[in-house]
Length: 437
Image 1 (cartoon, rainbow, N blue to C red):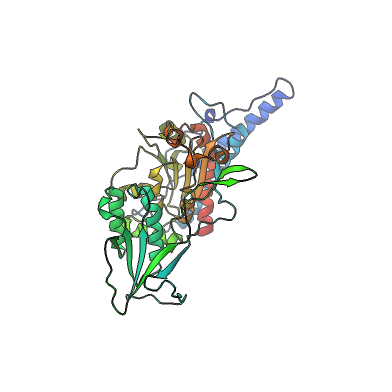
Image 2: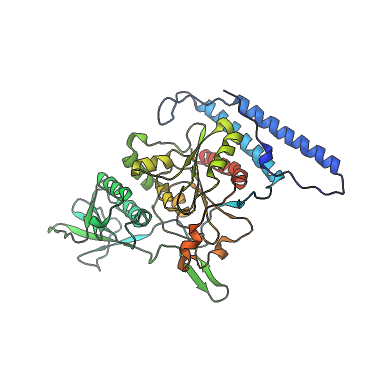
């Protein structure tokens, strides 16, 4: 393969030194360490030769050994870059840049990413449900999809995907999703998603529709066992207000997301946790709208320069087009880096072990999409400006009158800080593949 450029160490900060002390010795040692790392990185690149691919699902005959060897080389390369970045740190931001700290998302104490629901009989609410009951075609199971702002596809998905997941538990029953007013839903994304539901055997009906129940039929209503699945501030007598770090839960388990993906994507569905190299890295810019990532293209150029043939990097100005086109952008990616925003609803279509880094503006931290990543089998990271606390800064975000202003500015996450974090994201993807393959 063609040898790419060796890593550009000028992108990372050289350590500051003091005027006193054994300066020459330190300089010599640092030069030796840096030279060894660059030599090691160059050797790895020289031996990298992408395995030939035979079809769109990136499978090949007899490639297991070659793939393992290449993944080991990539792992060594990422570790070298991570050590180098840790030694050299970050230089001062340039211009409007803000350095971001990247950390792995964790659920709040006492919370889980599980979805809880119950069923009750529409004709006899006090009827006890036998846990061993076998639901058949004589049973109608109905999930009510009623929520404010339902015409905006991220909010539609917050109830639609749980309905999909729940109704998947009753494959032999008659299954329905009941909407407040179907004719009011105009979004192409939503209309396409309703077609996916119906292709999966789930009928979409208007709440004005009446169900004719035959003598031998039963009607069951799904009830969600949470009053409000949205992140919200909570009051504490001792510490004041705080923001609960738990958002809506979208799927009961990863296989529910996979079944949705298979119906939508058809032959484009990739049945793999991590495709053969190179890794696909998707940077979402949000061009021309709030939270536009100003340095997305600059970051992409630097990733290409440092990682060379290990990565294919794409900058997506904005997810546009029909549902399948948007879904494929996310489904094909191994690493996704994006500002917080509605486009992340398409995380429903990621593959297991996909690593997602969500970038938040100052004073606007929410946890809508992080549990979403977990329930689809991905690895969730979040980025927030260095030296600040996202929970403390955002304790009043959900009820703030200036909410639009807080989230409306540009995203200024620096290229340096993304490059600094990228080796960790790569190693997370590789570790996940090792564990679950």
